[in-house]
Length: 157
Image: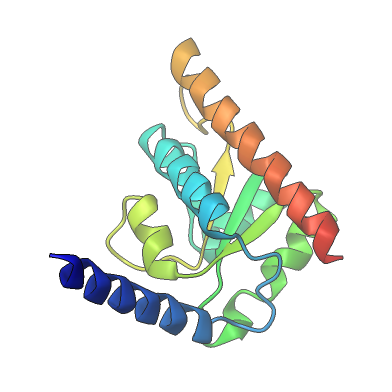
């Protein structure tokens, strides 16, 4: 029995290594395992409540319109030129951003089948209203992730 879990662990480590080798050199600040998990949970919750902008075009348009939120960017985008302007836009608009290792994970968290370069997590839905309870849950997750992202960002620069 023990050997099964060992082979699974080594396969998992190989997969993680592959993800890290595909990372773009500009992928900083990069979320660690715990922060990635929390970020994906936040993205999933935002997607369920329609508080999510997916894809470069939609995210950029939303930021330019003055929407605030947390920008989550996939670190394994190729060619990198597709997303290089997003962090700059975020910094200009005082929007915290974080890189995660893979666009596939980001897409599955955002409940889409296609890999996604970046998403913008908003605290309020663009249309309609959220129930008080859902709003509070989303806000709590959002605040926790944003504080960790800011902490990570200050340690990087």
